[in-house]
Image (tube, rainbow, N blue to C red; front, side, top):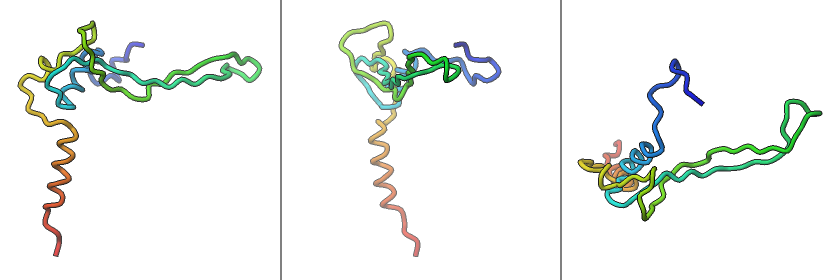
Length: 109
């Protein structure tokens, strides 16, 4: 499926590029990672009309994450290379610092 140039915001990212974005997002500094895709499968009768149904299946992507791996592969990202120069905190650390600062805010009188 090729995106329509009129509706596509940017060039689509490869699996390796998505993995690199996620490594930076989560603040990983070392290790090898690949995209992990969780799918859901539904089976049943499908067809254009009730009289023309056939056994079928539908597959949907439910979640996308990262899996730490031991060996480099074609879609593997080395966190030490993609996070060079990054000073981001992991997402959990950001959420914790936000909740701590929320408690320090002045209460209205």
